[in-house]
Length: 104
Image (cartoon, rainbow, N blue to C red; front, side):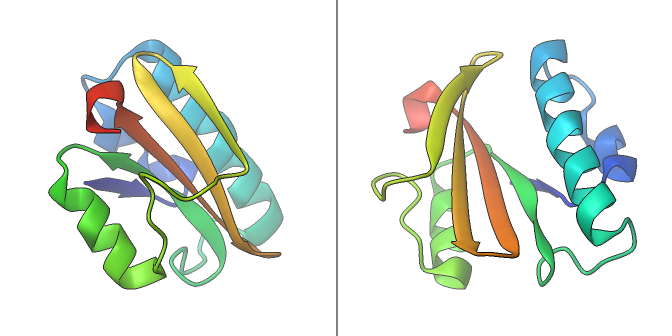
């Protein structure tokens, strides 16, 4: 799984669809603007995760206790061949997960 917390980590998305990169950059810019570029993003503000294999869901569940496959999310949207889900875990922390449709 790839995790990104700030826009300066966009280099991790080499080879991903342009539409997906644009969507992720918008989210990361919002997080950077509101919580700072140098924050510990697993603690403050939140992050973006791109799920590559089913085992990645288990890693996320073990840390945040959210079943990303079945729990209700704030919203879900198709973006660049991926399903995007937003989970707000508290007022100052959000997790946005992107996964290929077949993984969900």
